[in-house]
Length: 289
Image 1 (cartoon, rainbow, N blue to C red):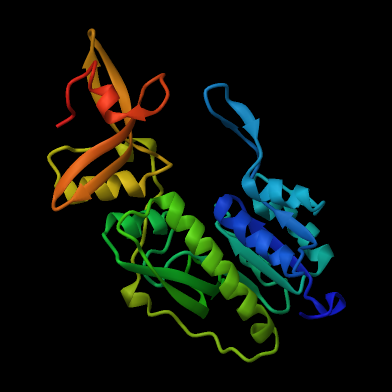
Image 2 (image 1 turned 180 degrees about the horizontal axis):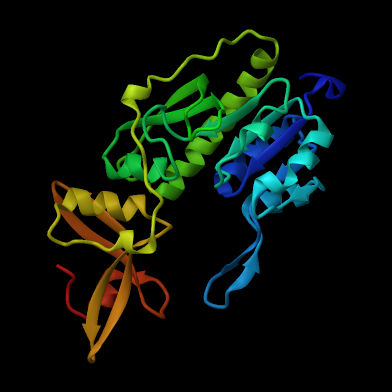
């Protein structure tokens, strides 16, 4: 372990649980940031209670200063005044302008959950599951002003399980990315790694997910439906509409099992109710398909 006085001055930028896992591991290994930048608190749930993002919660646990700008460009001078050695980002949610990326002397590194140039953009984990990938991974990239376009500093492959959901795979890739980052930072700072250009002709792009993307088309194959249920767990969630007593109700499909080409629904959550076993649901409703 390096002496704390010799550790680089880090600004960490991220928002969801993926970023929080990485931030936690950095801190545990003495790479404690001097500043954390994350998204503003948002209303969550039926009561629309203002809720801090997971990265903020982690930073506050260690009394690390937090900034939550609506636009990150508004805190340019804050970052300039800190003079960080390196910026590390993980699933922030905004494009970071070049005048911020260029501040640190060792550049700005991004932890991205795919093997770039495949699955650039905001939903790489969901896309890997939707496409039936059996292998994905994590790339650490030297950021430039374009989305997921920068040179690759390091990467690691990771197997996708046939039962992985977006949540489970995200947690696995966050831990894999954190471990890779801990190995990469010292070598990168010492100049022992030469970043490599991506093959931009092979780039694929993912989309920003919307709530309506989760609606299931029961005419699709069982394999596609299974992948959709897993890819969109927990958000936006896979769902279908049913009619009961003249009303159209949304039902979330929380869990299913695929065996020999047959799909079995296991857990659902009817609109306005708690999750339940599908067999229990069927006592008062007809089958989905």
